[in-house]
Length: 435
Image 1 (cartoon, rainbow, N blue to C red):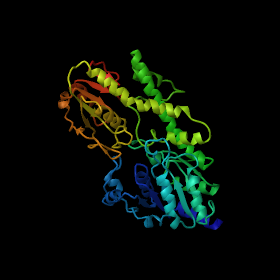
Image 2: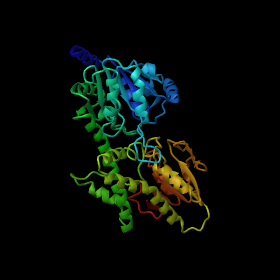
Image 3: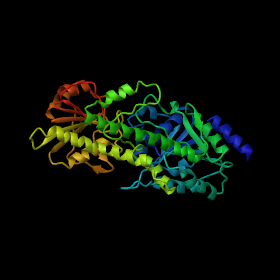
């Protein structure tokens, strides 16, 4: 038994194992390419045939990944589970959403995949979960699968959890630059996990148990959610007092200890921050405690699109027109990405649509069509941006501050600018309103 583990360790060190990545989205695809880049043979599995067809043609569906990066001889994309079964290590990067109209975890993707691998697990197979989830998930869904297949975890099969830390659009910090949290069912599992991730990450950080590693990721996201909520609430307070929140944050940031700047905006978005904290909230309630900050920060952040709508109506109230033309600049959930998931800009558009006196257009350099959760937004037109035509709109609202936008021209040609990202915080101009 010991000899077989030593042999597996040797194969990992020499990159003589095949890495299987399950789920080729914003987490899985960059991870697959990173393992391929350092010399591992990689099989990328996704049930979405459209993604696989694009990948085989070296066409990227993620803005931060170029077509050129997909041309790797040791990367095989597939929607065939049989091909995935040839992998020695299977890294699971599947979605963990909330159930529709609730704050309860939807573990369907994880549960279905755990069931599907029973047919091809073999001796010394390595299972790694990267999906963000509640403490206990890895042990709950994958440990029984290994045991029921007759394996002894830590001896002839290995169970590991290593939370993803992907930040789409961040050019400074890629997978290779970010320390990787690693834990496992046993010491041997941890050792295997450290060896694998040590090949692709700057360094690995080993934690005590699977549950500790799962909690680390949730804590990171909750930290961001709460601080974004604080920044958004302080924006409202400062606005009421006639103060500039960005001046306050700028000055507070000079303190060399005890302060990290977070900035207000139109809310929050993406898959992680609006969703993941509720995984801990749900789990915590099973232990008899209801976390307060998680619920409160979500309430504040989710209220921001409504706050912006009220400001827009207040600004336009002075004009007696029956129909106002509004341009929304930027609809991705954050700048320099093409990701619409949980975007506050889309939420604002949805709210404005319910009013009868707004004609809404949008522009985003990365997105030309709004299709959020399969809901088609009717009567929302894409505006092919020409800066000298901005004066045709009664109001221009900056919801996502992409670097590709020319803010000097936006200011020059717009009648009214509602700045939700602080791009003009230090400019005194009557046409600009911070919101």
